[in-house]
Length: 353
Image (cartoon, rainbow, N blue to C red; front, top):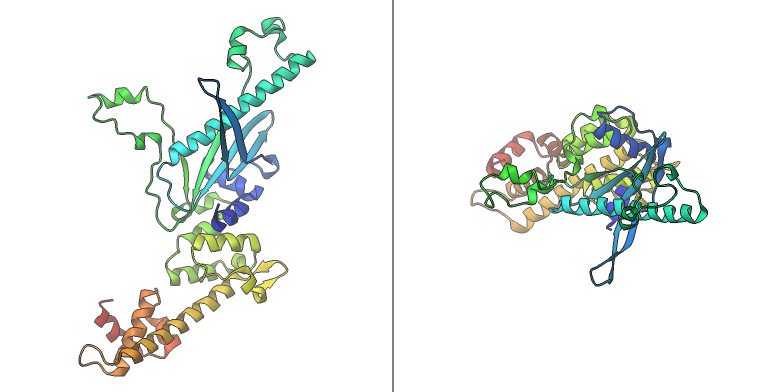
């Protein structure tokens, strides 16, 4: 697992945030799942599956985040798989994870049944007279046994919009098998993934924790002016974020230059809180200065270009080119470089911008 996924997993594992994520997606923002009703479960599913030749094969999978939700007498398993990149076989992958979780529950239920039998503490004596039937032995699962439902979310946070499959049907090529594809689908079980495309979330009001601010910020990724504006509009939140959130935001923004490593921002950290607005402002000014210096240097090295341009014009052209290509506005270029608005507009037209 990469550093980005580790940071995102730690951030989403917070019970309040985890409950809010599921409430926003499953229940439209109604606070049905409460943080105090959640319990962390073992992320590892490891089991031996017997083959035809009585040979056993080990199957081991790790969930990113998995919790048990206890609502009265009802238990549900809630899982979240974080994805930094599109996984084009995600329906099959998630289906395997869920199936292994169900299989593990059945195995654990059978172990408990055997223990109860040894202790003489039968749960369903009125059904079988205290004995298990042949079918129950064969199934390794008693007729009255129940397992907990599993709900899995896929939390995807790359800059690229999700273009992978949303369900198992998307991976099938069945149109040419028969003339009646719909009839065939009736006998093919489907599996649908519950996708959270973090950078393209709408209706942020469904969320009641800082998921709301973060989803809003992710809409501005790759747009420097919009991102800076959004941070200042929500400065009350972004001026005091904890280290765990800061690390997750670094992963979400996909830029180590944009937000420095935690060791490099000690001056911005107070009582375990980080002023992200200040960190971004310093980065913004640094990027402008670096772009100006790089443009000037390239202009001096390349000299006069395109016949009639002077050395000054060549420098301006390269400065503006570097900054425009990095998303800076004409106002910012003028503010930080001293290049006049008219010169910027001339260079912009020359570059076709």
